[in-house]
Length: 455
Image (cartoon, rainbow, N blue to C red; front, side):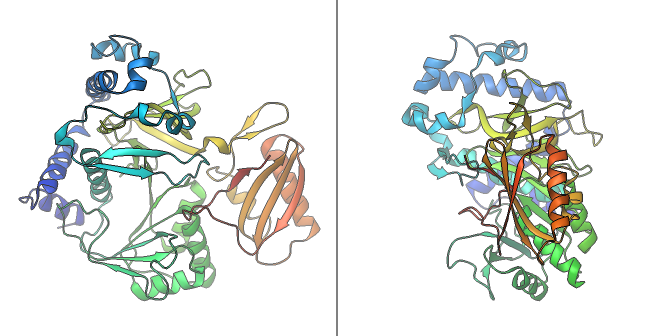
């Protein structure tokens, strides 16, 4: 019996608590709904969105003022284009609206309220209130990801993502009885954790010593661990796969992990304020939008739908949080919508999540350029010099500062190659300054920003 069969066998066992019953019901429904056709999936979504819009219009001050009267009475009208009449909600507007976004008629059966803050990786922290009902969808999508990627339910999961001072400190790290799913449906193996501020050689020593089956971490941490292991010839023979989240995960990282350990990377696209938006397909590199919980659009600068294959801003409507509806919420990332997947699932496809929206580089000409981390040519950049970490800072209208952590001092020729690469990449002769650091600073949440705007 493989791991996937074990998950599904346990999924059909009698649940142990009311929460487990709810999550079990969702997962059994997901197992069927993923095979709906794209048209069936779309119809179900607009039916859910219609109910959600009516709730928002009747109980949330902002939407009673902002939504056209009678907009959601007919779900078919939404799919025919009336949906585009719903105004896009800007991220910076959420905190300004405050209580105007809270419902005064939250269904009692949706449970307790849970106020949370986003990590602020886009530079705009957001406070959101969610319900137990919405949180159960989060738990269910977490378990769906484990099932899709055939993880060993009895194995050890290693997690490197907390930056909280004094938490999961090397050399022991943290010890937990089960994985972070905590859905009450599955009994998993143990979970171990380590602080992201641990030195990379110590992270690797900890991983070798604990020999986990699965690893969950941030892409910037994974890149440095895999590079170190590749350089030192260190293998992790029991490691089956790596989960990443929180940052862009490009082809370079997939290739690096394959070179280091010969295992796949499975990325998760989620946001604390909206929950899961997309999971990586079990059979392909691209992402499936989690349509049972969120409606995701890719829009152009005029808030109109982009064509398939065209990059645009990602706008999400999470229709499970009846406490604080976020409808057509501009989350701050860029993405590309894809064709129907060959795996047979009717869940819509995102072929690329191209990075945070504020990470777009604005040229003095007014043109925009997507920044680097998810780009296929980043490998070429890393081969120009012995670079361990990098960060590009837009510090003036026509000036970029390139911040590097390097294995040795760079030569003038290497700096010249980097300058030429940046000019060619962005199509503009920026003035380039170099700054050398021992370590590129992370955000307070332990995340890494490869591009920052500072003017």
